[in-house]
Picture 1 (cartoon, rainbow, N blue to C red):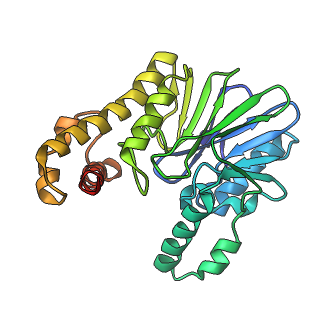
Picture 2: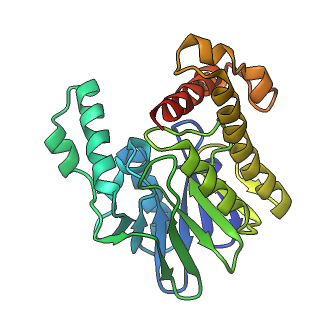
Length: 278
């Protein structure tokens, strides 16, 4: 993988860009151990992550999988002999991802599931990994999915959020919950991070910029929820037309890039279904 796919905002913390919607993974080097965060969609990209460590005469010791969606876990089989860490709800999400992907691609779901690396360490709320000179806190941040986790490097001020925070698209609720995601986002905004590595989109530098970026997503979800609740409808065209893209996203993202209009409508419909179910 060429250097154009890498960014090293702080020495020893390598951001790896993969091909799915400006995707961002990370490799964290400590004096004793190396941690990879997420494993890409494609084995070739996961192999390129492993090669970054090898190029520094190191090996990946830990792989933290932030959640069980394909673009974060399907390359995990390329990480041989590593300690794999994920949330305790991870397997449920992975099995759903495998089933959906296999049905679309005519693959055998059992073979696809067997090709993945599976967690040997499960966390409920949080755990700290000591890489030698560099502690890394992994902690539960539900909302995008029930098994979502983030990583914070307190000594470096680096927050690695995967899809809990995205900077290329509007927040993605997916099979999670918008209220949980908003709560997770507001908590992350208080981490006082100076570097934000999102799941998709540009890296954000500067404490104020990081905080403002995270809070924009939280405020967006809150504003959409308020408007949907005011509509008193249960979804469909009526509710999406009542929450127009320009009023809630404006010029922050181009409506045609990454199907942003559709993504916004999906957020609106998801929140409408949540309100109807409560």
